[in-house]
Image: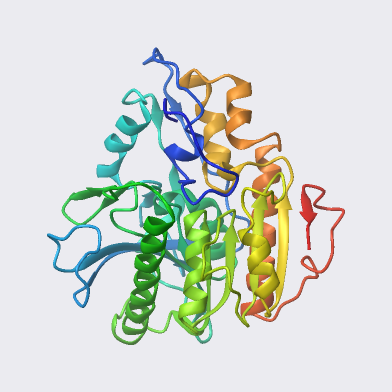
Amino acid sequence: MSNESSTLTRRSLLGAAAAAAVASVPIATAASAAAKVRLTLPAPTGRHPLGTVSLHLVDRARADPWQESRAARELMVQIWYPARAAHGHPYAPWMSPAAVPLFEQDQGIPAGTLVLPTTHARVGAPVDRGRCGRPVVLYSPGLRSDRSLGTLLIEELVSHGYVVVAVDHTYDADHVEFPGGRVESFAVTGDIDDTLIAKALAVRTADTRFVLDQLTELNARRPSLAGAFDLSRVGMAGHSLGGATAAAAIRADRRVRAGVDLDGSLLAPVTAGTDRPFLLFGSDPGPGPDDPSWDQFWATQYGWKRELALIGSTHTSFTDLETLLPQAGPALGLTPSQVTQAIGTLAPHLAIHAQRDYVRAFFDLHLRHRDNHLLRRPSPRYPQIRFLR
């Protein structure tokens, strides 16, 4: 949703799940104000109703590495959880309200052309803690993206009994809204090269470890969330740079017991593996000479491992744009071929179905010890999934 040209490789760490991920798709400059389109998200498939709450976390032990004027590192996280009851609680918006006009401005979308979706989660609904707390999955978005772009996957996991904690990495995210309506926007300066990406990964890894520390505190002391998290069963998933963040975090912190990289390049030392399970889940086509990082990781990963490809997909397919862009395309003046260029040739419902099922199967196997055999061998039910190794 941008007029800029894209220089992204297949798994480029620059592959932000928002504008940059579809940067090669121009938007018509004369979208009709009458062509208002209300976007929707497909419902999750599990039995649990969803609740959510957003929290402002402040790490006073760290000055912000991107903004020297900030004496402490501030983060916004959104905790998604199975709810005991949802009646009387409002649905959470897909994107925080103060960020919406900035999102429209950045993407060149005339104000009011799109009505952004609501989620299936109710704000502040009471938590269903389960018997002894629920397994936790951290979610990290791509560079210059934000947590909203992973909602499809997040809601699916929560509806099947997980708690998901989505992290906005302030200043390498597109826009992050804090309490009171303050919005902090992307502020990474300099060339996006290996040195800067290494810094971003270090910052994000520290963010992740701080969030885990805070979850321990919340689990013990916050009445509305106490006992909700089983922190002996923590996994992490991420898209693009978020996938590299999952690989970095699992190396840095043994509390992270399983990880998923959704189409994100890796960078040394993250290319060295661990003894814990890790899933590489990439776009189509398979790895090429421009990105040997997954081969390097595979050679050194001595824990459980699997590499899958989603046939007919692109880097953007692993975000909510897989379903939102086809809905928005006509109102934005996009042709069907331009939409296909952005999200690939695979039908969106098939892409979403496969991603949800395979990621959930991975966490079920390694955090719950439930094996539905989906990750053992190719399944005729999922011809869109290629087992690479």
